[in-house]
Image 1 (cartoon, one colour):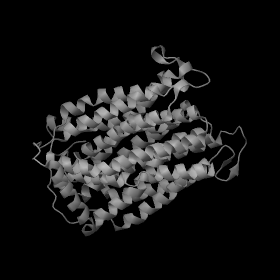
Image 2 (cartoon, one colour):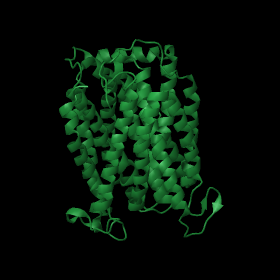
Image 3 (cartoon, helix red, strand yellow):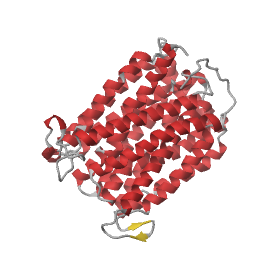
Image 4 (cartoon, helix red, strand yellow):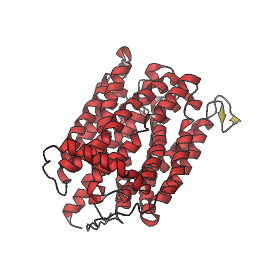
Length: 454
């Protein structure tokens, strides 16, 4: 493989590295628990978080397929990535203003949603570049390596945040005993609030290799009437789905199991903060274990994908995550898997750390294999539209997990009962997977000739 092709692959990997902190720092391990601290009540925070993320998911679901179709017709995916990157940076940076003395829940959720929408839409276009990086046999390994590289980036960002910035509410110091860096004021939680600007700066810096090294294979100028044509093409694609049963079943399956997985990521931190009374720092340590497991098993999952194909990897991961979802419900300060424990017992913490590691491991392999499976199910000539549909499948019901968790939590006042919908979503996804063909529906595949040594 020549140097240009190798740099292009590494540039593509850097998108995962640059964008992962939005998930790691904001959605799960730092900002979500901080929201719980600001709101005080774990159930109220979990419900609000669910409603806010559901609103962003609805926007993504409505626009993702159309944007993908427009990109395939109008060309130049890089312009779209630039625009959505700007949303990512603005949305995450604005979370700095979520200060204790002037906390505005609606403003905070608005900017969080802006950044999340930017991240998700940019991911549609970068995912659609995967089949251009290698042959059909190589893309599973490339996808796994990309996810693993992204997890390492998220891990490093989390460690930086915990060591130098995120202060404990009571101590005003980071978990290694330092004052927040740059003279940030712990009294107004400036160290923890810096998670927003740090996420924005991280993305801006590490997207540089992507923009320098990645190019569209055949960028072209969009024709007149591209929007109308994209809508017609999208309509034809949607109408054709019943005639492509494997693709149709996979979109349905992934719709549910990815929604459940995202629900785990979204509510893992805020759940632990409410149920186990963990601080932001405690949740961050939990995140480190989960991310290390995620990076390792995304890499191992990529190799398993290459050997066995993505379908067995997906099915195995769903089974593991279903068991974990049930296990999470059975862990509290009073009981662990139905066994009563002393108030000062560390067993609930240990159990949740282990469950977090399993979530990271199975989740990392699942996301990597899912991306590969979508490539196998797709028409090579409409890859961005396909990943727009994939985003639709991920977001058309993406409001179900957070909304159902928000509703059940609000009605019952119970965090454990609030997360039980995840179990049903995983099982529905596993059931629909039985109709998915490993090689997809019969369609032409343009073989790529860019052998990789990764």
